[in-house]
Amino acid sequence: MPNRRWFVQRTNPEYIKYLCRAASVSPAFAQILINRGIKTPDEIRRFISPTMDSLSDALELPGMLEATSVIKEAVKSGKRILVHGDYDTDGLTGTAIMVSALERLGGEVAYFIPDRLSHGYGFNKVGVDFASDMGAHLVVTVDCGITSFEAVDLAKARGIEVVITDHHEPKRDDSGSPILPRAAAVVNPRIDGRAPLLSGSAVAYKVAMALINPSDVADLLDLACLGTVADVIPLIEDSRVIVKEGLRLIDESMRPGVKALKEVSGINGRAVSTGLLSFTLIPRLNASGRIDNANDVIRLLLTGDVDEAYSIARRLNELNSKRQRIEEEVQNEAFEQLKLKGFDLSIVLASEGWHEGVVGIVAARLAEAYYRPAFVFNIKGDIAKGSARSIPSFDLYEGISKCRDLLLAFGGHRQAAGLKLKVENLEEFEHRMNQIISETLSDEDLIPTLTIDASVSLKEVNFNLLREISLLEPLGCGNPEPILGTKGLEFVDPRVVGNNHLKVRLREKSISLDAIGFDMGGMLEMLDGTNSVDVAYTPKLNEWEGGKTLQIRLAGIRPAR
Image (cartoon, rainbow, N blue to C red):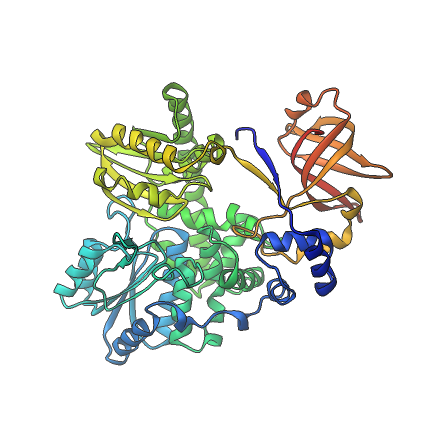
């Protein structure tokens, strides 16, 4: 990533003192909480001890009352119901939640997951045809459908009602009002912008809560947790509660499919965190939807048969290995193409033969490496179909919307999107996107920022602060691991260890702490001859041979200023 500017967040010192007294927290922790929008003692108590009782009423979601009425009537009348999901982890876990809830309600339920390559994204004619063929009278979408105008009209023409549950951005008119498909009901927290931001699986969980006694669907929180973490939803408000309770269920491994997946991922016995899920279970759940058909994932999540669960989990593990090989190949080619082509304010790359299931991951790698919105397309015939990933300062969906005249289809949200256009329009699309970014962002917006939660002295970094930081769990989007900053530390015995890691001892008067900077060995040359440094870091507990010591994990280091 390009060089970053450091930004230290600060609050009125008198308010920090008040919050420390009123909530019995340290000044550093008070500042960390304020940075997350938690500014009163009551808010602090609710944040550090989230409970199921603090979940907002499911019926407050736009469209929920109408949706539950339609679904209950269909179940009561014995109508066949099709749950139409999506092929990523959020859509798959949400589909499993919805199927479970409708079956518990007594419904006659089937599910359909579109194939990424042959069916395309979302609720479309293929899904309507499937519903017709199976004799469904109601389709309930999960994590898709908010822009499926033609499919909803086609279903209605065939006598099939549609209930849409989604969390993606709806189309809007010039005044900003949402334009919705003519479904029997549409449940989506983005419709009015007032509801808590939820994943598609969390919306499905809310529907389950509204249909059935909430305590009777609490066992489905592990699935809503997986979908929420996978879709990088801010872990605040309801999403924080869902993930915290879901992590506990995943730890307990009561669901055979989750237990099997943990075992093949090699994480049995380890405490489950959002970060661990992102590198183990979630890639395996995503793998089948990226390079195969994702129906196996639904079977894995719903099965009560241990042998079947382990058989499917092993297959997903193999698919994930295959996905990694394909991804590495496409990524290498994309980075090589970029070196030859260059880029301006956006990165737009396209090639024949790039697997559509991994172009989104490659776009994310490019956006991270060069700090530019990245668009990666697979070319097939005269059509380019791809995925995009953004940087925090740029609203990808809004930017793409301004190019709608060049596109055949698009959808997504602020940081990720999918789109399709004719190959002949690629060059104009890139030119237009560079222009939009130029008009939208300042030069500073295009420089990555290392945001520091609090400026502290080294004596404030102690076991009590470490205990307070642990209360922030679960960490993730919207509630990241806190970063502290300390200026003017003595730089003692720096060296490179392991695979290019920087190891050093940092001293402030009589206090010193060991520090490790992963993949920061290259900084040693820049710091050559430096006796005093500014550091940005997260304090960690280092356990070794039965002893416990504090250690600093570096996020940034520079000569003292």
